[in-house]
Length: 400
Ligand SMILES: Nc1ncnc2c1ncn2[C@@H]1O[C@H](COP(=O)(O)OP(=O)(O)OP(=O)(O)O)[C@@H](O)[C@H]1O
Ligand SMILES: [Mg+2]
Image 1 (cartoon, rainbow, N blue to C red):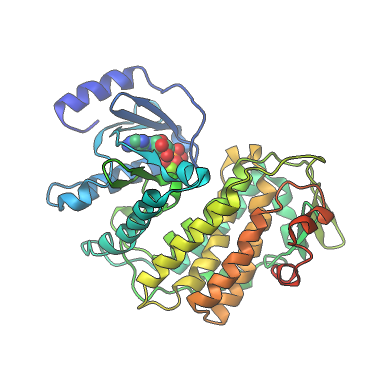
Image 2 (cartoon, rainbow, N blue to C red; image 1 turned 30 degrees about the vertical axis):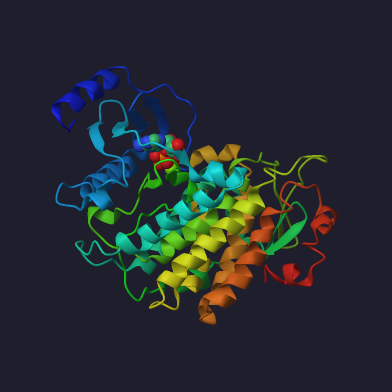
């Protein structure tokens, strides 16, 4: 346990009561969060301990006393850590509401402005903290992450094993081409070859669920960083652009219910349609997808010395969505959505990186890919016609 003495006392007394009662994992990798007054207790079992330790290291690094207050004040202060039962991080609570909730409710002008500032801060001010070692081969890291994630996901999502035999994945009647058929080596090599003009300090999990907005104070804060990469490395900023792009698709899966067994037949891995009458997962998800795409586009404009960033982010969005499958708790998600939407983003990302698409070209495709969140959970292909998606020839062409 580390931290100032009074923090240690508070943290120790909370640690004594740990593990914190499970209030359900509120985030992507299954951590449990308990908020007690001004204290946030974030705990995980052994499987998430490495990630939580990395978060603690990153926050301590960014919160170092030598850092300008304008940077430090945007992140929670680490009050202590405990490895007593699993792993626990004690953080100071920051004020405000999370930007995801606000965006789903319909973000007002102040929220939009503050979230825009948070994104500028992440891609500009953080990037200027030019004190870390320059990055690894980030393409190789992402390729290995994809491989490792798919391998680990086979344990709790057995149909993933069938992926190499499937030309297409069909979810709710919508066929999506599978660029991972055969051995998927082409995708792996393309991801491995990704190169940023310049790697930089990144947040590492930059989506709206990790931003707090406080309108009265006219302030924003960033939570839950993952940009640790060994504790001291920079990374490709396209990764955080992809984090913004993947959010709505991830929520489609997280808020849905698995539809049951998949069948491989004639090169199609088919998942049963949701039961008739199943409502859409959340009516505001398309709005969230558009809001995020705009933020992603503004980030790419900021990175205008790196014209390939939008194309790389498109491919990495596919990698991120498929990588979520590695978490065992995704068995309760409508996880086939992660699979199908991830494959669709990979396919488009292959074309984008091949064709060196500009932001403008990528934007057009992002808008079409985001339409995948519209028909989700409807019962069959005919239902997709309801919003024009499947009847729209452009949309049909999407999962090439
Ligand atoms: N320091 C903090 N101050 C205020 N609220 C916080 C703080 N830390 C977390 N929260 C609240 O808890 C929610 C989830 O926190 P966080 O993003 O750290 O964890 P997570 O996404 O559940 O975890 P993970 O994805 O790492 O498994 C946030 O969206 C926010 O509402
Ligand atoms: Mg989070």
